[in-house]
Amino acid sequence: MTVSIKKHELLEHGDTEPGLHIVATPIGNLGDITLRALQVLSNSDLVACEDTRVTRRLLSHYNIKVPTTSYNDHNAKKVIPRLIKLLQSGKIVALVSDAGTPLISDPGYRLVQEAISNKLPITTAPGPVAAVAALTIAGLPTDKFLFIGFLPTKKGAKKKYLNELKNIQATLVFYESSQRLIETLHDMTEYLGNRPAAVMREITKKFEETKRGPLNELTDHFTVEGAPRGEIVIIVSSLKTTKMSDQEIDRLITKELVNNTLRDSVSVVAQTSGRARREVYKRALIISKK
Ligand code: SAM
Image (cartoon, rainbow, N blue to C red; front, side, top):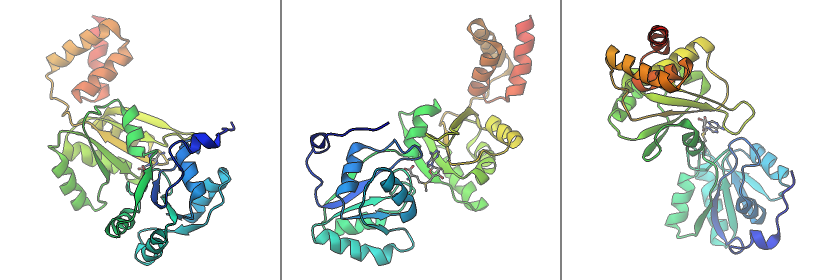
């Protein structure tokens, strides 16, 4: 699909002003870039990128020919003075990361801090963030959420961190790698308690997939199936899965079976009660035959 953009539409809100522009880029699907992001990138004197090879692919896809430079946590100290100098001379500098919004589990914080202390203009061309994209499809409360990003990788630090999160009354949003997914789901079940959760992978990409259920079931599922490949967001509800008595569970199953199939009833009751799906299934089977 070709998008035709009339120049006046892009310029509706004024031409790109000099200063530092924090520009969000797609988290997978190259179509997920805003018209203004393209405008800012096209007008930039320099695009500071986490990885120039990744960003050049995006820029060439949109036929944008501007100079790029590498900016990441390792070279920040060296690169920042050069970027600040350019900004002081009235240039347009864009900052992008490999995917999504810079500074969100990505480099950029030190550059923004430095630009602020030098009283330089900073603005943003907002766009995709994996955390927010995942929240919109998880099916868990979105009225209050806390972005955690990546958990510590060391066992002790991870346990301590999860224990600190235990009493927070907000939906929790985590980034996780595929290799650590099973262990993390297991640790979450143990330290946060069993709760409704969702695992989203490869959002906006070909193999996008969402799996919802109580943490213990998700752990079982991925232990059996193997961890999925690709990029992953885990969302965990703050609602503790209440410990329901067997009678309450049976009552809930009976109620669900009135309007739902056996399979759907089992899903709802397992998610609400935090009981293992196979256990709810056994009870539901007996009830449905009565
Ligand atoms: N700045 C990015 C953002 O705005 O979301 C996040 C960068 S962080 C280095 C990369 C992590 O974000 C991945 O390990 C994964 O947890 C999450 N992520 C990024 N893109 C994703 C996608 N398409 N699907 C699922 N998770 C994604």
